[in-house]
Image (cartoon, rainbow, N blue to C red; front, side, top):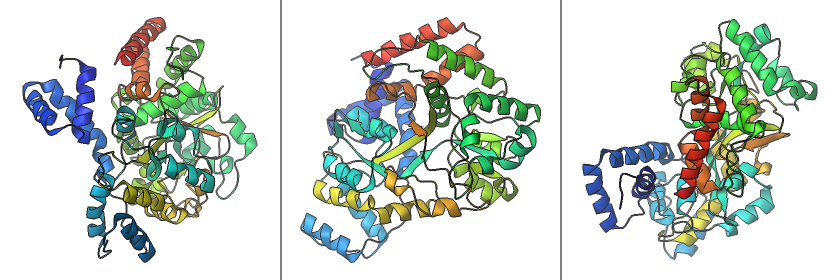
Length: 452
């Protein structure tokens, strides 16, 4: 077996970190890691990718009725004496440490290691409405739901911008375009296009407050550029798995990004997921693409900046208003010791009362997947300024954008983790490579992804 093959190492590292290797194979891969630096690096990448998913949800004490229902399922006694006891009990039930199961891992390992959960998700859809097409694209594989859309961690990454700087330098009142407690102003939102975004970026750049849109290799950057590509109709691979990167839509998206880059900070191609947050909180920029985590930190560390922040949807492009999203999921391993109890737990966590508690505990950060669960009061109450998150949950003409879609998910995950779209922009704008050469490079990369 050729362990120098990057794609093979990536797959083995994923299985190693997820814990699905047999003891014999795991022992052999440990030896490979000691001898091969590339194997150690592949494992490190997967560990870094999954570390945030180990964070527990806020403590929640189930009702007595819930415990009785679980007891009936498992044929034993479940004592609700403490949250720590409850979390410890969950591990054998779910087959994983409590938390979300990474979508990338689900896509790679279904159907070998993941239990389909149609019997959970379909009743939730009937009860609470359909999830976004982006959530379905990731969570439903080969006609089956392979994981339950989770509230915890799921987020949107639309613009978070300075009210004062937009008024002063752009001449646009964000709170009027997307007012708290009221529908968007259609006259203004119809004008909120990617072309208008470019004009605003230029004005703020000239004023000394550039937009902080990352162009690096991490999730925030890939999600932002992915939304720009989607809004222009650019698909690197179509839903049937055909390579379609060589298109006028791709050329238009690349030309747009080339224009945008000149109005961004010069180091955005080296940014990670924390860079844009720091940029905004430090008062250096007028806008970033990010969930409310930046706002929450600004509220703590720089309240004067937080008082001027407003979160709202992405601009509209020729193909629609694509807003970057990052859904999380809960899944059940096939090796779980008690799948029936796991199903009961996931049904409980997906109920309206549970979802609202999770959203409240997150300060409005978390976004439930189902349309009927996006009317919680907290988004209109977060302050200052009051209502800053009112238009954070997706609604109206917004399309939840998943970078890499509509390519078959197993291929899209590789496009995502390899940051193909931002590499294309880097080659085109920083490497000064001809557009057609960059597109040809991308086509070759995509062919490689499809062979793995």
